[in-house]
Amino acid sequence: MSEGRPFVLAVGDSLTAGYGLRSEDAFPAQLQRLLARDLPEAVVQNGGVSGDTTAAALARLPRLLSALTRLPDLAIVALGANDLLRGLPLSATRHNLDAIVAELARCGIPVLLGAMAAPRFLGDFASACDQIYLDVAAAHGASVWPFFPPGVLAGRGLTLPDRIHPNAAAIARIAAHMLPAVTQALAASDASPLNARRASR
Image 1: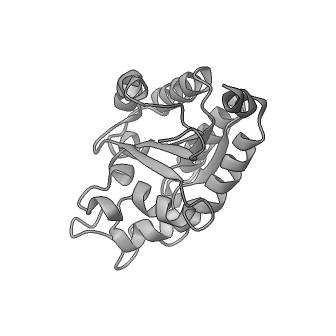
Image 2: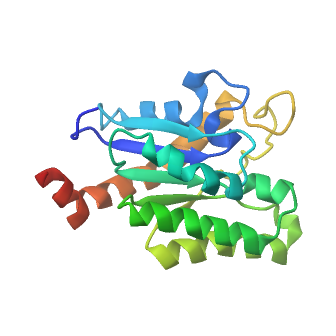
């Protein structure tokens, strides 16, 4: 990849990795095709691992970053769903997300947090989940955007036979929903002093 090509790293779990889907139907590939309309040379690398909790993603982050051939212009971090499913403490999720975003920032990589919403019937607990992403983003100057558009999470005709994981049609909606936030984050990265320093190398 040349330095002039926008490079996005997608860090996540099965929702990013594309559990049960062809590689071309996974979130990174679908997002790359959408970005290509305005950024033909954009590359979105799949850094998702099915089953990852925030702790597992934090543990593998150094290996993931060291394997890159260049610094990403943006990292999309979409994690927390497995923490919720496994009933892990919100304090642990917050700590791990904060550490992930802090490490990416230390490496000079702008971050877009894909917020994982808890079911609304959980009331105050769902609100506490939402607040984690807002607080972590604010602490590190990162962007934040809901990962799931309304009506997609476990929507009729939008899941695999397991009735949990999104199918290709659902991922298409997710990618289209995330596109404006990704485009905006890339534009902000292009205008940043950090990016100017990259261009001068």
